[in-house]
Image 1 (cartoon, one colour):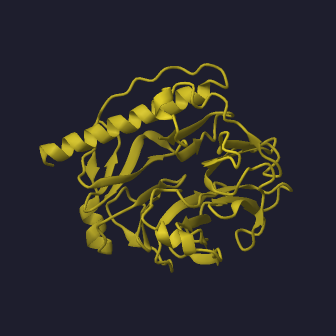
Image 2 (tube, rainbow, N blue to C red):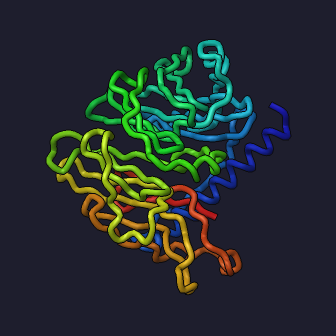
Length: 328
């Protein structure tokens, strides 16, 4: 890789690291102190614009990252100290070479998304298969169902929901949102989960699944028939422009905490803004604002006369109350 590309990617990794530190420190203001972080700038063994990174849930040292503009697919088994390029095999097997998102299933199967397509490997990148999915949009999220390894749900950046019951090789479109006019004008945003993200959990009765999704028009919606029909769950939210969604669940007690990250919008009277982090402890029936402390560590000059810009939300599925947000 050219030295300039190495420096550019190393700088990007450092910037993202700093944002992540700030996000965790901000959210820690509402709860017990969290231990400090130490970051090492490791860079990535790829060129192109890095789009997405995902960890193998079985081993935190195994990470996959993808890039578009010819950047390809890379994998590390030692926490990022070195990276293996898996692009050639993917191109030879699928004839695709520019990628947007990557997802790793609980069993270690890796799915890489690109414009209107999805490819899969189950042997650590040695061979790849092209899934059958009828969409011309970017897949932005895959939700895996741990209790049913062959079942998974996918959303694209228009909010269409797809389901696979054969391990991700064939997909059925279950739901298409009716209003896509504004999304067409914002199609350039292809970051994972920017438009819709799915969360699957056992249904309140204990039988079947409950699915939740976010959408910039319809807010938070819920499905109890595996994605065929949806109802809104927005009581307590100031508006419906929900950027991202996450959840913590306890399988034994069936306790659920849902998190929604909303776009910041100016109040009608001009006295401030609404949006940011909202939390529900009753499976989305009602929502409560949880923004206290978010800007404790942000210099005032960065907020003067500006609305905050929230970009991404990640919720720990193991530790109750731990969530991360990134913004600018």
